Length: 310
Ligand code: GLU
Image (cartoon, rainbow, N blue to C red; front, top):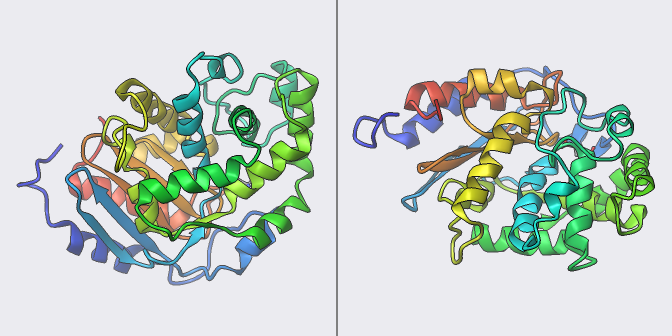
């Protein structure tokens, strides 16, 4: 890894990435089950870096809020581990890549209701259920967590978007009912899915998201408090590396060499342990569901800065 002295200045690099990677014409896709995401202009592109030394760099559309979708799963996992004094969470969800689509029903049936990892939908539903043991409104609890760590009152739940996704959530409801049938869901399936969809509908900017994720680059130390132990922060990074990019975690590790989590809203959160948290957003997705331009920009950034865990 290059030291701060050797590294080229970050501001101009980010401007250059925006110039080079902002989509010029529409390619890629939008998720079929969340119609409002299709309305976001294809040429949006933002990037932000929050460093462990307290600086924030950003460029492009870094201050336009977007739907964080599955990136929320990183933060609900952090909240669940934070409160999991008895260590029961890891008896309900595994830590292996799934090798199937993020909302697969087949694997859950074959594996008797224990989801492969907390970042596929079934695993995230178990995590949300776990949080709901403390509060029935886990999504609002997550919003508070993000607001605190981002140091900004900006994040909000897009309730309209959540309601629209909820009206076409048959598959997530099916997953929740499966979990319930296997005894791996304590709250009513409908309430868990509602909380889950609302947590996915949180809107944040790249700048806010990079700041909110910074505790993962700082051995669990948040803005004003200890969020997680260094071990748990390391473990979340490991799960991001192996399971964070849908069924393309291997390809992302190959191209970018850093732990990341993406969402179908086109955002990606990446951690450079000890250095920074990076958030990039561009709405059109590749065939595996990861931001097309966002992934390309992160590969470029990692090459230019030498940031990698390898
Ligand atoms: N709310 C989305 C779903 O459950 C999240 C998908 C994602 O970003 O992976 O389908």
